[in-house]
Length: 286
Image (cartoon, rainbow, N blue to C red; front, side, top):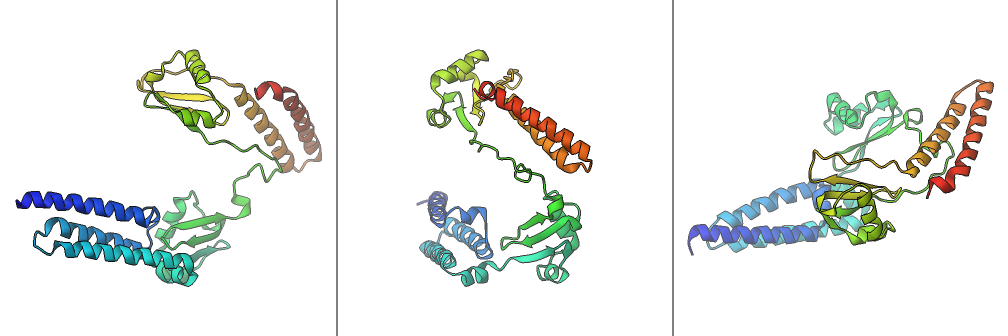
């Protein structure tokens, strides 16, 4: 066999074997590389290159080495699932870098991080002031996770005692001009409903690159023709959501003000708006 043809065949074999073995190791091997997995990835790549280019008669030894590395990696991952000590030994322990707004310099030196490195990581999480950080920890994969102190955390409906309805996942019901019946069924819609919505917007399914239905049941589309303008439907659920936001804002203003008269005014307005929403709910949620 000619050398160039042999190299092609070996490369194809190496790619197929690496793909299958990576599937066996799982998604974690790709998404969250530990220290050992990083070494394994580099080694497997080097062995695959050896199999592709080394045209002597011992190329099968490279295949054996790949299988041994994968077996060891798989065994270590299994051991990590069973033992906390094994996880700490292989992946290292998480390190606290900031506590109560104070930088722990010794831990920073231990992880070989400079102040600039730490500030860069904080800015990547929209944190520009160390004093605003309640807790910052460096995970085993090198990622720094940050918890802001309470006064700097974003306000949520839970803080205001407001219960909100669960939101459904947005589903793609049209892809590449073709209907996705399973996604449409998950949203509780029928093909006839979809065709009626497209007719309202004077669109053909073949002209749509991507069509999605959100939790409010609203259809939004992206056309193949980027310059084409698609009318944005004004659905009643959007008005309902806006009224609920106004209600939450009134309650927030009532909690924020120190004036007793102001509190009573905001509470009165909030109560009146709640009654309006209750009266309009059967119309706005249909």
